[in-house]
Amino acid sequence: MLDTPIVHFDNVVKKFGSFTAVEKADFQIARGEFLAIMGSSGCGKTTTLRMLAGLEDPTEGNILLDGEKINGKPTWERDTPMVWQSLALFPFLTVQENVEFSLKMRKVPKGQRRERARKWLDRLGILEFADRNISQLSGGQRQRVALARSLVTEPKILLLDEPLSALDAHLKVRMQSVLSGLQKDLGITFVYVTHSMSEAFSMADRVVIMSRGKIEQIGTPEEIYREPRNRFVADFLGSSNVFDGSLKSSGNEVWQIETEHSSFTLKAPSEVQKTDGSPVAFAVSSENMSLAAIGTPWAGNSIEATVVGGEFAGASATVFLETDQGQELKVQKGHDELKTVDIRAGQKLLVHWLPEHCHVLPGE
Amino acid sequence: MTGNRNPLINGLLKLHITLCLIFIFAPIAGSFVFSLNSDRFPSLPLGSFSTEWYRLIWEDPLVWAGFFNTLLVGACVAAIATLLGFGGAYTDFRYKFFGKPVYLALALLPPTIPVVIMGLAMLAFLSRVSLSGNVISVIIAHGVMCSPFAMAIIRLRLSQMDPDLEAAAWNLGGNEWVTMRHVIIPFTKPAIYAALFITMAVSFDEFAVAWFVSGLNETLPVKVLGFLQGQVSPRINAIGSLAFVSSISFIVIAQLLMRNPESKPS
Ligand SMILES: Nc1ncnc2c1ncn2[C@@H]1O[C@H](COP(=O)(O)OP(=O)(O)O)[C@@H](O)[C@H]1O
Ligand SMILES: [Mg+2]
Image (cartoon, rainbow over all chains, first blue to last red; front, top):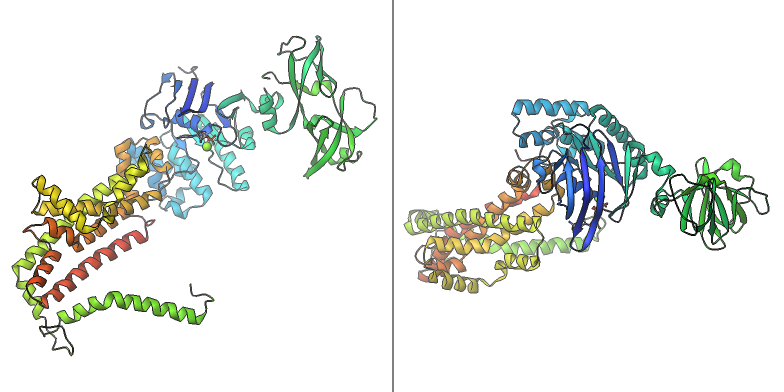
């Protein structure tokens, strides 16, 4: 049993009328994993989570929890507690009563209920508020109550739907470390829905990126960052420039790609097979591009572009440029490096990068 | 509230409110004063102070019968209308379905129907199913008329509820019935009490429909009309004052219950 995944989405589809909210979700979640589901608003993250919780029924496909098919099993018979975006704490109950709620539903005797609730309140550092009303708590404290309320039954899996979105930046970071710590200590599976890349990438073991109901990529934060699978992911990460072209010659070492701008050289990817002439898209991270004055001799790939503007934040700056063909490029550099070039708007510059910094998008 | 407002406008507004209140309460106050007046006819100057009329109604078995009928009807109507109103409001809160606006319009319609028409229709219908002319017929008729008030009050409360709250309770292991008991009812409790009192007050005061369907089992307002038709007696003033005090108490209690819904019910 232990090597079966705790959750298996087996080609799950969810439709609301004719609208497809989740399209062929097919993935597994390992025991003890911290999985983040990330995507912009309306892409179907909550719907995916709600299907796992038993609050929505899949239109097609199966969901397996612990190897058991749970389609149609009502949420109150699953042990899949959820931390809600709105927290959904019971305003007419005290903190302690909120935490005791699921034990009460399971007919745990009163004394035991109280003891277990207090243990979790203590663990989350809010024992002193046990007898307060929810309305008397701050945002961060409510967050902890919601966590305690879901964890009090010691479930194997915890579902979280954008639990930190209502908190300010400082508190958010603090709660992130509370959550990661808790997950490591308890060793249970967390499924964490968020639209924030920084939350997903800083906490999760693996990230699922969704867009318009479809899963675009699943992988560790590093894999996704280094090797985005397709244009959507590359754009979503926001730090890459994507070029389209066709494969002119595919040697063992290098590929030549013909694009509307010019021909580029890139290091032959080991995991992608393509025949000459087929379309290829590749991404270059904006950190791996450099700027130079026109006419500077350069051995790698280069392209001429006009500066549109810049964004200067912290230790680095992002310069936005546009090629003659109208493609937008962004280049991110430290201030020191930028001192050597003139980056006023309207200036024409040479953008250059090395062949090994090109990443072929396998999903395109 | 009065902030930087022009003192003239301020004064006029206060005058306006005062006049409105006088207009509403002067007849009631008058009736109250005359109910304690020894004279047989309500005229000035007043005679001496007397509780004679109260003593008379106290000793009148017909008044007592009317009073008990009113009380019985009121209590039953409050329970039935609140139950129906709760069901209607919860259906609206919980489900989306085709034709919901029509359902809502129909459910909330009864108070907009002229009472005479309502009374006639009720009489026609209840007599056909052999339910007219007794207490049950008044209860049924008033139940129909009062449940929209209960529904409106409970619906308002449910609209203040986080829509995730119910699903959260299910998710924490409560099935639908248990969740109804542990989440929906505690949350709507103040509104449920308020609905009980308001519907009771409405039933207490309702005359026209009761008149049509009550037959020999008259409620107090119907009894009052009976008095008026027979003779002009200051007993009416006494009954009116008592009825007013009861109704206004129900309304005030309902208002108090609705005022602070966030406070924790014990
Ligand atoms: N009960 C529902 N009925 C109809 N459409 C729904 C329902 N729930 C969600 N949707 C739609 O499905 C899409 C995905 O919703 P959701 O999963 O809540 O997105 P996310 O959590 O990623 O923001 C949205 O376009 C939303 O409007
Ligand atoms: Mg959502």
